[in-house]
Image 1 (spheres, rainbow, N blue to C red):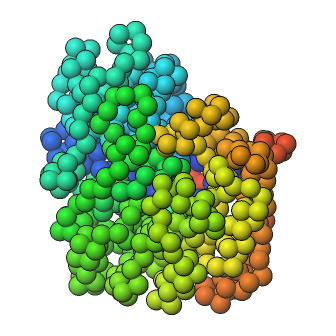
Image 2: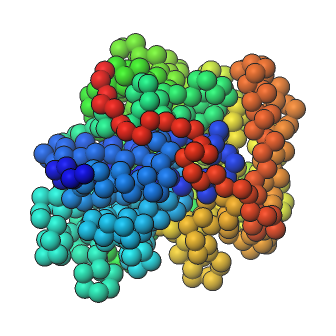
Image 3: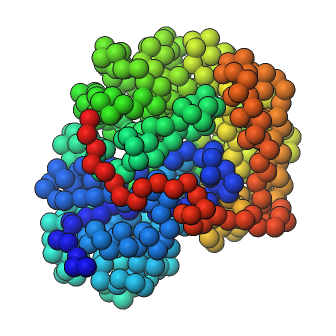
Length: 535
């Protein structure tokens, strides 16, 4: 069959869910729309380029099927957009994306491939060196570099002139001079929204995507359709363990970390309300506000939330907040706008440890009082905790676990601390000779190959064992199960009880590898071609 006319750019998100989430991938892990693919596709279309999206996770595509779909699209440039639903996902999603790129190179070497994402921004030269199937990297969010690449013929001489690009045209990985990120003044112009119409679906728009289990009140039937979007980008803080701001980098220095570019940029309320109107027209009410700091600047969130209320949208949303940035006087506004959940970054019970890893930016705060105030407003809480900061010992880990059980929030996330590429902690770990994962899977919090950091007092295995035991203790706690039943219902309690029957396998703890379901036939079937969306 002859190939159709070349598409300008195909944005690809490969599937890494089985390796990252083990048995949780099939039923419990969220399937989020590829947010940055949507942003970049709409941005490129705004400049006159023809774009498409291939989401292998949503469509349950095997590597073989994905390669053939890329071939059918016949793009001038294949852009692998490697982000995800957690801070570590830019690294863990390299698992499937790098394998797909390498396989594409083996079968159809004529296609030019490009990677963009947080891991790529953190380690652009290493990514180029490690994979034959990766021709180019964009070492920040890549908007302007991508526009300039697509405006060219993509010949070698064009690539050498394009700022913000890494390549191997000199026979070794090389970074061209840096390119700027989209400035605040041009956010609505150069990142003008989301290309929702390019997403695949089965019977209705966004029905191949599903929310987090708890977002739907622990009811699997309410998880789809689902959308996630940003109303702002970045974060003002410089926490040691976080790499979020690495995609803001405007330096080609090899020691660049996320703390070098703490910044936030906002879309106008008018543009965001247009996006909410699109989702409303598509029948999507379950929405994640993916902003790192949505509950921070009232000049941003007040007009947006009031606009949502005025339009009468019946959304079920959640957003992030640091525990020390919650403003009690605005909780009613959030609740009336449909924000039913807050994800609160508590991180550690010990204030000294928490302030150390956040560079002293955490204010002294009564965590119990904040949680009580939020819940009194009618908003549910997901509390986030991290085990294994450098100064943690067994006593401080127990303090954190006990605080999580005492607070008994509607949902609790607990992670073993990782030195994520791009974070200041990653370079501290390198400098001190601490063991860092050599494979992408090692950075996945829930993976078989998960390899967290040791602390000054505990081994990595002790940290991981403590985390896994704490998770089961929290979720099997009778007081927690009683809370779930009273707030969400007996069926939902049964669903949670089914969840904590799953025990993750861990290589570090001596477990045998889990069985892997890797082919589409072993997973939920869907259609294999996107349908054009209509409101």
